[in-house]
Length: 178
Image (tube, rainbow, N blue to C red; front, side, top):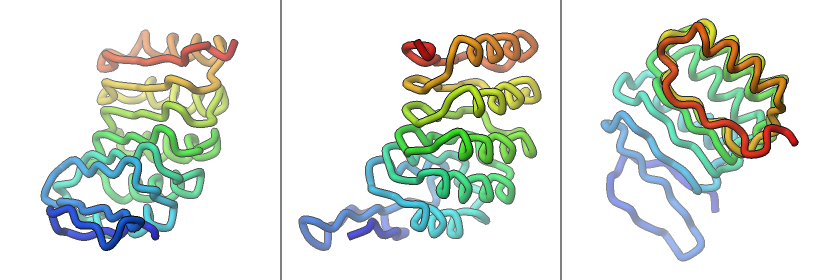
């Protein structure tokens, strides 16, 4: 079955094939990697944490969010102005989803750490990431490994980094689109 959310800190399983995700909503870091999260469950999670000022970091890596999940997270970021870290690596997100996320992130400029590694993204979305890097004085970490970003996209990002004094860690694609 699909993972369920609970405020409990204890980990339980209803049965051997029933994964469950238990989230401590008092912790600033919500980590739900590898739970089979879809965009529907992501929407449920976002409806719970949107007004919770304590939650500032989301690790939703290795799930099945796709572009629909990216859209849900973009809406969350538009409403929740204190998202500091977002890891959506390994989620089947394409350029369209990353564009939505970056546009939302640029509006409130608090995002410090972003991982979009191992998604189906290339230069179209990296241009939006570049705009975020140019405008943000908060972003310190950017993870782009295992994407389809080409040398052109990497050069555009490098150019944006010249004027950004906050960015201290960038992880680029292994192959640079080669």
